[in-house]
Length: 266
Image (cartoon, rainbow, N blue to C red; front, side, top):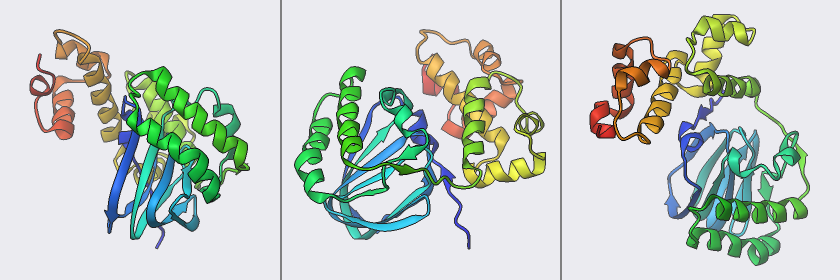
């Protein structure tokens, strides 16, 4: 049976620099998914089975797993692993993004001696340092990516079918969420029959188009409201693309299961 990847919305929406240190990951699989961030995994103990863009391999201590932007990837402990997971969002990639437009680093980078002697210290310093400063975090990312790009040979990107279209749709929604977006208008914008377009979107995102658009609107509205001392939800809801207050409250409650006043406190 064909596996379907889901869109991991969380990482694309996080504001902070993300570097996680995981220990004792046993029996917990990471199912096929993708996001618009680069993901780099440094295995510090144990072993995992990985699949990145259809390529299956095992990664063990001192191996690095690389998933380029929008790569479909999945991870399974065999039987456990410890690792660092670095999520690199677009705003941190300006100095090397052009190098990775049509090519990518290998999904498995297994020069263990190089990784252990040169890169392990970089991950530990990133994890223990204060990376709340954008410049500090970006500096660490540039150092790490510079060393990887100078040591490992790049290869052509092998993207999943139709994934580039889905990413283009997500980007379009991000740029036009205040406008009246519908299944008909988006299908026409991207040149698809609306029924096929709906099926394609649902199969990758795991959410129907209307719910996803309104989820984006809610997230954008909350981010804006958090910067204000007092919020007029009526004005904001219409400014952020909702056609009625009923629609706004329904989708807000669907995401947060609480009212806007409880979440935002104003």
